[in-house]
Image (cartoon, rainbow, N blue to C red; front, top):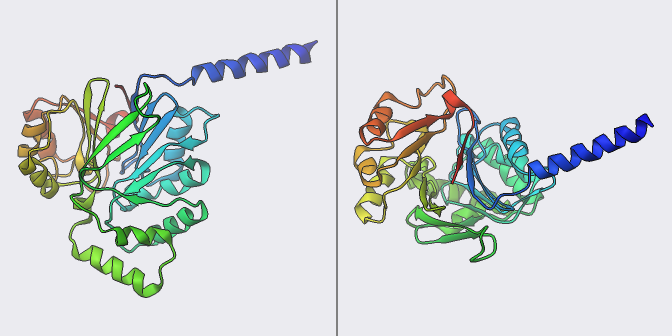
Length: 296
């Protein structure tokens, strides 16, 4: 008799867990606490989009396990905004645990052991990254349905498709060195970060990766930046991002900073915090709050 009641309890618990993780048609954004890095999860219905994976495998998996239903082992889209360790490293284990439907990135790459390891994991899991650039649109989910997510790519301004071929892992040594050398000559890798604009639930959300004041200047001068509701602050609150001219253009109501507690870079800097306050943005930070969740 006790075993019977025990079985009933297990069934009730399982059903309750399924119901509690039932997808909602209202989108939400989870800025995962991954320490000094970036990882943003956007969920709408059964669609999940992961933008960067932070530096830690354990932390990104913990965030996914808490926010993605346990029975759902796929991600509809991964965006790697740049190949710095603090954005890329955690994605390796994600690719091993989840089936990835789309993977997009920029063409900025630089030599590192982390990149070599990541390329190997991409190959083993048969994931082929695609380069995106300004003017592209990324659609997730069935078109014109209530669960569709649509991202406009605002940056980088162009891409070199050949550079993205490095993720394929099939290049010989000379081809690889040529690509890495050409990428290095294009300047600061952060300024090649993917920048996305999401319009969801009547809100405009600007996701800026590690882009800094150089990219911001071009975006402002091009005149294609709207007033926004939510800003994922560029480069963890570095003083070389979130320029006053840029912030006065986009006028965010809410600014979210992803940074590690007492990180060695001093992010977010007092200069950036001051500029955000100057334009009236409410500031939220993962280094003081942990993971931040927002209903869109």
